[in-house]
Length: 130
Image (cartoon, rainbow, N blue to C red; front, top):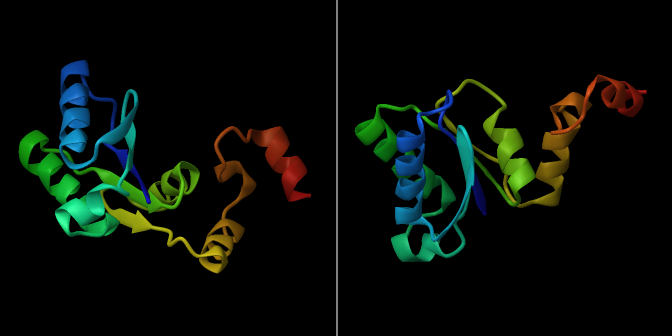
């Protein structure tokens, strides 16, 4: 599973680097998405920490709140796109997940407008919706 961690408003460089380092304490594979997010692969960490992806997301949220005073949002999905989409489907400051089940993924994507997909602008959204 992949975590998409959104730190909120763009953070100063020093804080952002510290947040990325915090993620690396839990997961060895972290991709920074400056200025306000990161992707992390939890496949090797779940067994090590004895927690599922949601449990690791809870630890990350707790650490970000305690150390940096941030209420981060975490999306969990089987790939980076789904993790990012689910993270942005609601109010900030929560953990949201899309299970790795084709039927659940289909239901989740069916309820989204075409414009919710990254890179889809107004013209493409109109073409996809017609």
